[in-house]
Image (cartoon, rainbow, N blue to C red):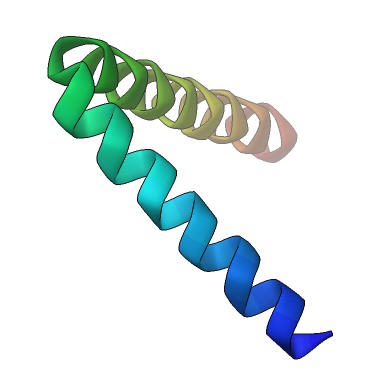
Length: 54
């Protein structure tokens, strides 16, 4: 099972590198969308916690 996880991780790394090399603009867009999603989630949690305190 550990061997399968290691192979899957290597495949994921190769795919990410291929995507960055082949289409860097698209890769940058995907990273930006990811960070925007994380930012929105953090803001929502902050608002939720603020409402709980009030």
